[in-house]
Length: 463
Image (cartoon, rainbow, N blue to C red; front, side, top):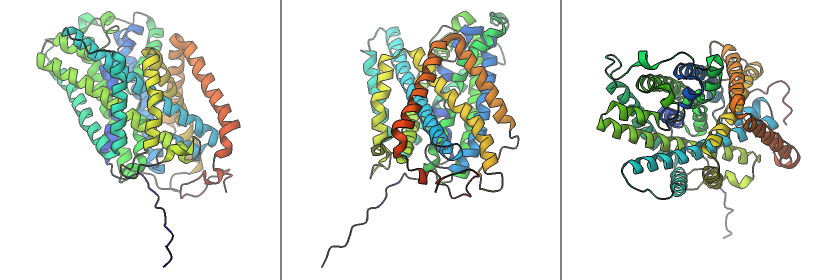
């Protein structure tokens, strides 16, 4: 009897996630910004300037989250803004948006690994202990979290939800123990000053105000792995931005009421310093644990998001096709995860922390600029009613216009301090675009560019 031909079964990502996982992915990648980083806005313009920067950043990311809720719940495929750009604009923009996303996340993961090594070294020094070489901590952090992502998305993001919830609870606990209703610990009247550097200081501080929210758009990377995209993505994203707005304002309120702005703008761990000033030992332990967990949650989510973008780009041949493999047992994009580990470690080991943060924020701003334009094009190409949307923003196009204006302000804020880095990032992405046009575009399957079961937009040239 002749052998029957063997049919290969296509292995795909599992749809196992719910709204809480989307919330954990979006909030988990960001919440570390409340524990460290945001306070450098205070050094740029004072405590009040940092509050204004917090609100401007909150407005910018509220626009991002609501735009993302509409567009991502419509596409519901891995790759997030990269996949959207492929359909809405075209290959060159898709390639660039994919690179923006990958570098935003791997730079943020590198910054998290550096921050964890610094925090552990700081606490060990306070206890007269030695944790060893900080670079070893960096390597172990990245490798272990990559291994966790490798093993399965449900376990990884369920773990992320739990540790993110604990990190958020630590911020709430610090706020409660500080007793803002009694002013026993807080002294805003004595500590707050006017704007020491004027309104230019407010603009300069906006750059670090974004650190409260950077990465919330990463929740869209779960689109192909959620059970109900039209429900989970909008609910998870919108609840995520509300959580971050609450956490950011509580963080500023407590820290600005406990520390002079000169000290607050220089400390590397503002929430941990605030807990020490309150003086409760259980609170100090809780905030320290919250700091560690927030860093781990952010790094875990970054590895998840960067690998999904790389996987989606490789699946479309924008990157080498071998990266699009799915593990037969764990059902994760294991090759994309492994491929990004050495890149992340290289930045974490050899690049200064401020440069890593700057490159991450710059890449993120480029994504948000694209999103402001993309939602306008999306509404023109597929008007409301022509396709199924999980969420429809009632105020369109106001969020898009506000987002573009705030992005322009963000670029100017970065230019005031990091103009060289801004130029280098623009040059890097321009060179990458040339490489894609002349070297990689020949491998892109143009006829498969449009993959959604929708009526084709006017001007689409695919087959």
